[in-house]
Length: 232
Image (tube, rainbow, N blue to C red):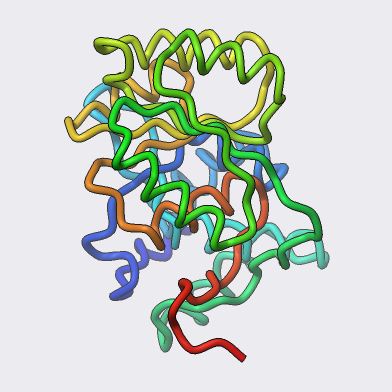
């Protein structure tokens, strides 16, 4: 029985950034189940890329995480979606269901074409507990990927004259770790076709960048204040 798509203020106007493959991997739910829930209950409705691929917002990822938690607790899919609908009816963004950040510093490979932008993103990621390795060319990125074995790679699609799509494909073939593609151009469809787990359009907002990286690594949760802000 369709419940009607969620239209909370946290979701309306948000852009989809996660592929269905990334969502499936993060939640441990098959892609066919996610598609079936959308078709049957009509509650969490993914955006569609120009090529027809499902892409999900960060809030939709958290909503699906909530559904998965209810299923693990023994509820049926219908009851889990009904509970989600009741929860969302009176709330906007909710932090429920986010996974605590485990100990340890994950290494992020940042393959960029803009040195200034790379430095800004380096600061944002390090301030949130990540280690960062910067590569300014596709060849350097591949070498560091093989040597350093990062937990996640961020690939600028315009790197080395525009070979970011091919770089994403090669990294995915080498080792199945998350790849986040970024670009100042609207190239989300190309990124998803290349196997990217998510796409962000520049200019990158620091909190969104860090939140996306945390989500792709299964570390979803509140982002700490940036350096210079009041800390306890």
